[in-house]
Length: 266
Image 1 (cartoon, rainbow, N blue to C red):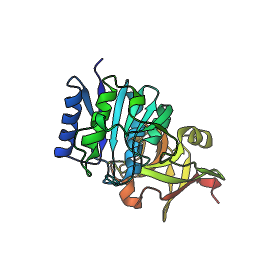
Image 2 (cartoon, rainbow, N blue to C red):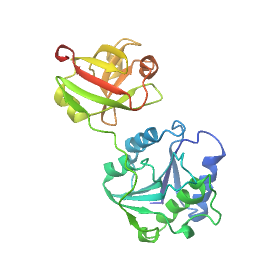
Image 3 (cartoon, one colour):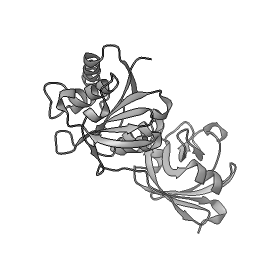
């Protein structure tokens, strides 16, 4: 199997992604480069972390490069998360951590061996000059110990734990996707234990209060109706059929959410 390197960035369309791919191929011309997502909202580390968390478990052995890096060129460190069956390479700002933990995080190493990067390191484009070539080197047989020393004080990021309340949970918005589905941090096991499909749920998102059906999928309600369902990545989400729940509810990452069975809410 060829060396797989994936890319997840907030770069959108343009020359930056092409430059990163060139840096990878310079190190390993046989690499298979796959794009996960380049439409991460600019500078939104939590959004990028969620996309990596949702996508990387479905790859065979690979190096996943993540670049949502508002601190590029500052004292923020560059890291490799060493996981079961994967490396995650990127900035030390929490971006990589949820995905790394989901895969099975073994250790985190700071990238200090500059010989693994490009000869000239731009202060504004570590994705091209450091992260991409390091990922390519790792997938070409470079030993992870040659990247740099293990660190324990890496920047953490998690999606938080919902708090139990009568009939449900107080939670937060992790993010929202391009369809406007509002993803909460209530994981599937808690949701399935608390409610059954067909229940009606009393939901508050920010300043909006509503009662919605808890259903298996979007098509079980009328177009433009709100609903609650379980996302494919394993969290409760508040959605709107064929429309944007995020826009209607003015939802933003980190916004408080409460969800309870309608007759149980106090």
